[in-house]
Amino acid sequence: MAIIREQKKQLLFCVPYFLFSYIRFTYAMIQTDVQAKIRDEIILQAKANNNDEAEIPDWYFTKLAKENDKFDLWRSESMPQYYGIKKIVWHSVNFNYAILKTKQPLIENFQLAGKGKMRLFYNDCNTFFDESCFVFEFEKPLTLPNDNKEKIQFQVYQKDKKQYINVVMNESDFCRFGNRFYYVIRAKEIGLQDTNGIKKINLIVNSEKITLLHQ
Image (tube, rainbow, N blue to C red):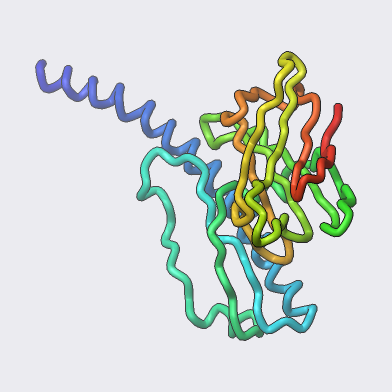
């Protein structure tokens, strides 16, 4: 009887854990499938532009039950040859870039003087799977003069608060792949639940203030 009771306890633990693990794993695989398509598009676009080199993002895994749920991350040295180019550069990333395909941007083709166009995405992900975040996509990196001690600042105004939240970044705090540059603000950094709580977002770079979002 003691053995049967112990087996029941193990079963009560294993079934919920299996479901927990399976749901997270399935979600992660869906996201990485979209990521793979984005990388393919970047490489094929580079080839179409007669570039010998392509810069692509590394895998980004959403939350998993355990680390070894990740698949093999081995990269073949013949990958560039397969695509018909000379070199592929992998860049580390700090956000689930599948949202560039699966989410509609909050802002589309916002023109910044001297900095090209910008798009703004919000990954309103359930915390069970990942962290919600704002993703700013720029055609050019945000740069500061070499002798400038200033930082890049994003001022986030929330509707129910008078004081804005200042998110400070260094010049190098971006992810780069393809021909775009990405800056990320985690929702938890600013105590945000969803975009409905946002009133305005300003960008300050080189002492210039630019309103990116006002709603």
